[in-house]
Length: 428
Ligand code: 531
Image (tube, rainbow, N blue to C red; front, side):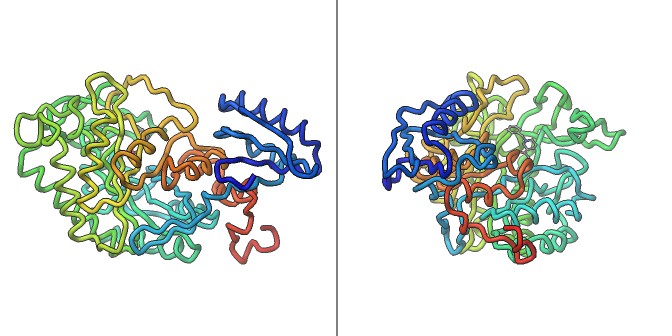
């Protein structure tokens, strides 16, 4: 029972076999995970062991008081130290666009949105894709870090995050040919210039497709240099704002990813064609950013590990890229996928991107974050415990449950792992 790969359920006050049956049913229905074995052990306390269970036992069972805790399933609450930064656990808030900034500046919305997740116990809270230039915004409501006026609103939030034990991070980004769009709740289509949009840039003059019909201007070499300088300036401002974790956004079909993928990059100069040429912009930008981002602070890169389309960027190239990012001073690869074409067939489901994090971690020898479809504490814990990633980043689940780490700590039998704010002492 104490082996790390075991999963044990403590069913206090409930007949164990009944709970086991319920768990099996829930597992099959919700995640199609297979419980290979559930067997009673111990001295009749109602402990059951389930081997090879990946994500199961939904929070509803816990809430219903049917399962009180898990034994030996608390690895997700072990601290993670990268460089001189220690996360109190391996649970991070994935950067999530809120489209609620004013001319790029963070607002009270961001303070509450990010702050409540720090209060909820996240180890890392990453502020949403923050544009390195006004043209690099996905929508007019995007966060930005292209001007000095953006620093203090981010710094205010960061002070709060730190007060509540979270490490404040930021993702810096340029949306490339997917910039100049309406907010999702306003339809998400490209905005004409007369409707508040702007001309977009990309490696090649190829439109994304779907509702994003604008044909981008193929970037000149001067524009490539300028964008690199903008990333560097953004990194400096992030530092000035007190960010302790920096992520370069090179995923989801935005500018950096557009250079990586042969689908969007048809250049014939040194920034297009071969693998070495397509990764050049990201490598050069990483190097330039690392030169101004202190050695003591972690630098992460988010990539789309596959375009999910024949002839696109794939996991093999991602592994090769990760091997090259490591000596450039990248500490962690945040393993996402997709966003390159509007009609990719993506087998989305629980943890569908975890195998990418696992392969990159193992084959490139670099720390990874797993993201995508992680909702259950046992699943998050299994990912870490089995060495498939160094940390998990949750997005939508954090929108549903800002205090997810607190809930997970209870499920995983480690309720002291998340101490609430003193103001909530009588309830936590
Ligand atoms: C969702 C998304 C995930 C994977 C591929 C494409 C899109 N996101 C990504 C966000 C913006 C909003 C939607 C960013 O990466 C900035």
